[in-house]
Image (spheres, rainbow, N blue to C red):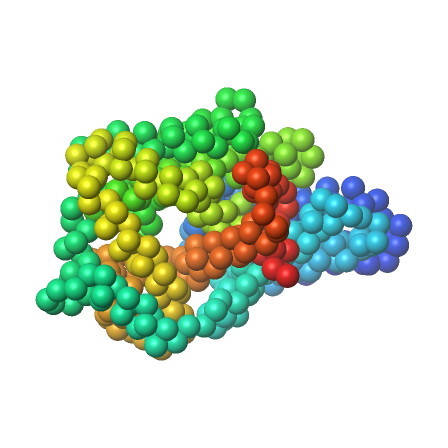
Amino acid sequence: MKKYILPLVLILLFSCNKKVNIDETFKVIAEDYVKLVLEIGLYDAYFVDAYYGPEEWRPKVLENKDAKIPEVELLEKVQALNAMLESINLNDIDGNKELRHIYLTKQIKAVKGRIEMLGGKNFTFDEETFALYDVITPDYTVEHFESLIQELEKALPGEGSLTDRLTEFKKDFIIPKDKLDTVFNTAIQEAKRRTLKYIDMPEGENFVLEFVSDKPWGGYNWYKGNNFSLIQINTDLPIYIDRAIDLASHEGYPGHHVYNCLLESNMVKTNNWMEFSVYPLYSPQSLIAEGTANYGIEMAFPDNEKIKYEKEVLFPLAGLDPTKAEKYYEIMDLVSKISYVRNAASEAYLNGEKTKEETIEWLVKYALRNHESATQSLKFIEAYRTYIINYNVGLDIVRNYMESTDEITKEEKWKRFEYLISTPQVPSNLVE
């Protein structure tokens, strides 16, 4: 019982002390939260997406890699953190400190949910997304997806299944592997140029681009701290021309790289809010990160600027025919409308309503992915579970927030976006 004494003492201390020092309390909460997240990471290889805090806060590596997570002990630490948060009188804080309190409350709720999952608790799909990401996803019927598919049937007529026709159509827009590096580096530099017109980045920020294989995802930003990112692009499947700008903006500018740099600069280095020195993947922070990264594509390349740039620059670099671009984007715009199919497939699979084979067949039929792509999509679901909702639900929440005000100038819109990616935010903050 001795190992549980400290959390219980903290609970009593912070629940009884009415005149707490708010800044000191936040400081204690932040440090304990970071250490708790890092400890959970010992039992969950995906949990800690980034850490650039004090090296001495890292826990010792487990001698037994198969050790069972100490659920009771970790949940008592969660209880102690919540008690400290509750000791802070919300009437005594405002502005970013109030956002900080909300952020920590939601993040710690997600930490609790993840501990319980690792301890064996079964959540339904909706319970999991609410516990981890602060949202419940929209529920669309099969009829909804079928109506969207009918639009594609009209736009892409022909023999055979629509999935086969779409796969065949897209073959003309694959970036040759020997040109991936040139195309992607060009796209990233253009996304960076456009972003830096409106956002001041920390001095010395930089990234390295790598092409990898045998991954469940298409692209990933591994933020290393000190304004540096490793951006990896998975080449297991064909990479289409529209993915160059998408991934350049999403993983780089003004997406994940910018998001992480600004949080480190503003929250950690300027404010000394150390909770932002760690990024737990399964948390509301991810919905904000993925939603803003996807919306960042529209920020850097608004209206028809993406198509124009790709036709004039990237198509020729990739050796593709730019005269086919208009039709390609007409089709891909329709395909983007069925993104929620993957959420529905994930829900059915994770809730045990569909088998692995049935889920792949469903993705082929309704997500219009060929068998290879559908299998890759399922690998992502198996690895990251409900995380998939962060891309489309996150985008919708961010878009609604960004476009909820009256008409504003481009400069004002960028300021609004910068505020969103450089302050403590959770999904429920953005939903009216």
